[in-house]
Image (cartoon, rainbow, N blue to C red):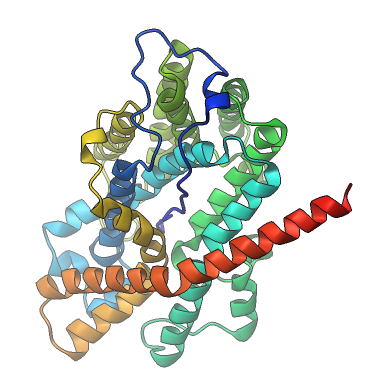
Length: 389
């Protein structure tokens, strides 16, 4: 299973005075831990990204064996056993995404929500495509260079539904995210985000995932995403707990989706991925730890961990997620096979270089291009509103 999403997040305030009055806080509930950036959430995102990175470098077979010149199982006999479970960072990303998307769309129109997602996703994605495509062209021994047609289709981020090969192996998660955004926009944001609408959406989507598992159908599966939906739903419910406090309904939604999510993912990962078999109990334990950490974030129990450097971690997580796989393999090939650096040094040096490159993408591409896109799209939306009067 190829990893994820990093997952793209935004940073609005957690509530507004008008929305805060929408529903009474549950009795005895703790208030949200501040209305600013949840830096502890940035830390969890980086941890999930590093889990996925470790999986791609030391926890799987396939192309990474070409980069190392041998199996990671032989190079890292102890580390590879733990790295095998690193791809579960994807599910943790999806839960974080549910939390943050619910937070970021509160009080926004569908148009504003759409523009925020475009600005957040595309600049770093385009930069990663150019870098990875260029490396493929210069080092075809690492991976096959893409055709011009495939590259152009990949620029749209619609390569999977269009049936074109993915240049970025990890971008399958962006397609999963996009379908979540679409469902949430149609059933919640369209009429205005509220506690009641989010709860109704969570309950309806939970029922749909069970139906999709009981009566498999290709189209229904594409829309409902039963393997990943429980994690998005869990994140949505946890944001409501963060905003309003916990109640039996919200904890019930989380409990049901924790059970469904573990069962579905364990079933999906039953194969050995061509490397080592994965133990169901360890899969469940890793995912439970990830969700439990997000529970601590939602209830303010990790508010003490809002260190400033975590803002930087949050900024580079998405570009790091996009580039770490293929560019990391190229780095491993260069450092280990061409320069003869031992595996124990090659692995951390490669991860560190990918983090540094991600920071460069954030500063040189994401910030300036994102600011230009944001102002341009906002101006066009304003002109469109005037024409519609």
